[in-house]
Length: 326
Image (cartoon, rainbow, N blue to C red; front, side, top):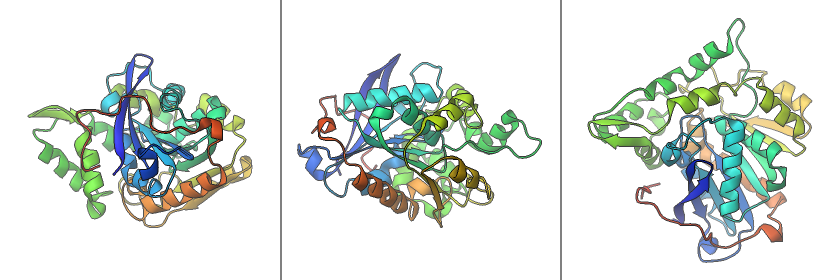
C-alpha cells in the first residue's frame, strides 16, 4: 500500500501529514486528483485510512490528511487551535505537496475546518464533502453551548484525562465502545494504537484536552463559521450518519437539522449513509466505501488543473512511528 508520512513546517513547529498515493503516482506519475482530508476533534489522520486506500485504488490520486494541531504527532504544536488555524495549517500541507484545486473532505470537527478552509483558501478548493460535521450543531431547548459540548463530547473528552497501563488495555477500552464493538477491524486497531503516547504504565491519548476545549466552542453558531458558510460558492455534499457517537440514537444531527441548510445554501445536498454511526462512517464498511464513492464523483467532475499537478513530493517522507497496519 502506498502510504507514507511527512512532517510539514507550520507556525510553531511541524505538522504530521499522512499521504496515500495511487500506484502510478507513487511511481512518479502526475497527480490528476487531489484530496485534503481533515479528521474529527479527538482523532488523527488514521481515521481516513480505509477511505484513503479506496480513493487511491485508481490512477492519478493523492490523498493527504494531517494530524490537526493538538492531535496525533502534531500534538506538541502550540495553541491556540480553532478552525482558522487548522485551515491555515492544512494550506501549508498542500503547499508542501505542491497541490491546489483539491476536493476538501472533512469528518466531524474536520467538516467545520473544511468549511473555513474553503472560505479562506477558495483558490485551493475545487469541491467540498462534509461527513457528519461542518453544519452548526443545533442546541437542544434550554441547553447552553457549554452544556451541549459536554453532552456531545463528554465521553470522548473524558478519555483524554485517563492513563492506561498498556497498549492492550487501551485496545480493550475501545473494543467495547458501543460505536465500534460490532465493526472492529485492523484499521480501527491501528487508529487506536497510533493515538497513544508516553510509556507503560502511563500511556495516554496524544490528543490535547486544551485543543479540544478551544475547538469545541466553534462547532455551533460561531461567527467565523457562519461567515465562512456565507462565502461558499460551490456545490457541497453532506453525508450524515444516522447513528451517533455512542453507536445509537440520537444522531449528531437530529431530524430536520439539515433541511434548512439545503434551502439556505445553493448547491447544498445531503444524504444519510445507512448502517453507519459517527465513527464507522469513515473507519469501517459500509461507510468508508460510500464516502469514497461520493468523493470520487466530485473528483471526476473537477480534476486538478494542469498547473497544480505534481509527482512525488519533495518533502521528507518517513517517520519512525508510521504504523505498518494502517
